Image 1 (cartoon, rainbow, N blue to C red):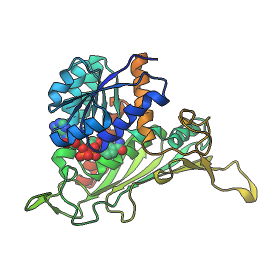
Image 2: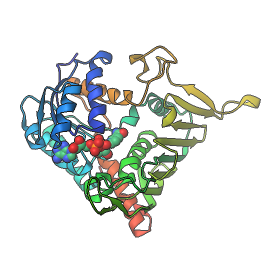
Image 3: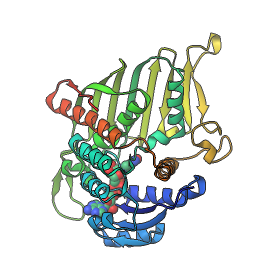
Image 4: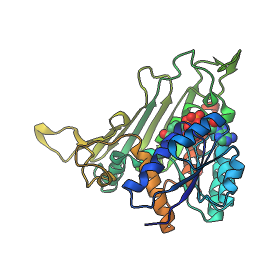
Length: 376
Ligand SMILES: NC(=O)c1ccc[n+]([C@@H]2O[C@H](COP(=O)([O-])OP(=O)(O)OC[C@H]3O[C@@H](n4cnc5c(N)ncnc54)[C@H](O)[C@@H]3O)[C@@H](O)[C@H]2O)c1
């Protein structure tokens, strides 16, 4: 078991809460020393105090610049809007801290590369919080693909649907502002599916996309006037993978009735795999080896102790949820820090993913195919 890692977190709302829950529980279920939740940082003082009290953070800071310099912190966890990822990560790495950063890793691939170089230069562990790699069903899908269960992959089709912006009265938030987020649904949701595509299929070498802002202005919260929406409401793109597969990706916040619907369909020469986040304990598998009248998709309930991560939890059939993926990522990160080894997805993965996102956005803007440079 490793020594206890002392954590400082920046950003205390949605992701700050999800990750705090993971820090609280990881030491109970993983074979790691329970982390010390040393300092929480936010610019909203009232919310920060309540957050620290609820989740047991020992101290608070209003300045991330101060937090990353503290000598009682080993790991900096970045849960802020995207524009702050690069400056916080670079400063934390240069101060010798390990870093976990929310996705998308940065505003653009240039920033992501700076983060990677800073982390490598400081020889610290670095991770991007693509938590869906750690859904047991998707970790199993990767194992099955590696074992050749679906053979050569022809198609990777991903949709990520939400509907919270269909309401024209939903107020203007940082996610509508390209300067705070880099992009909208694209960087938020396609970031996840592009990472999963790289995890399951491999590198993407060219893309062709289109984007739209369906509602151009939204009311400013708590005040008068309207803000102009500069970040995409939806972006879809076609892709070619280096190994020959074709891909489709669609991210939208205008899919009425779909709350957080991430669905993957992967078709290969020997079979197929289907995953739907709203049924995250299940993986559909079709094998061309099955013959006769009973051939068809089978539904694997991914709750056996032989399945990835499941032995940490409950007996077969006792399902887990979305929040467990954060416990898995923190468990793996703390294990890697303790053993002094790398962990994926790291800033290299984040940078690669960002290159694909940038290329798709460029393609949408210029209405043409964009080819990626896959240098290391
Ligand atoms: N992995 C996932 O499934 C997932 C889900 C949602 C969001 N995210 C990512 O997590 C990040 C945060 O998103 P969120 O939904 O938690 O946002 P949020 O708006 O709920 O929370 C952001 C927090 O950062 C704080 N903050 C803003 N500026 C700050 C500063 N200068 N110093 C300190 N704190 C500051 C805000 O006050 C707020 O508490 C984004 O990068 C987003 O893309 C990931």
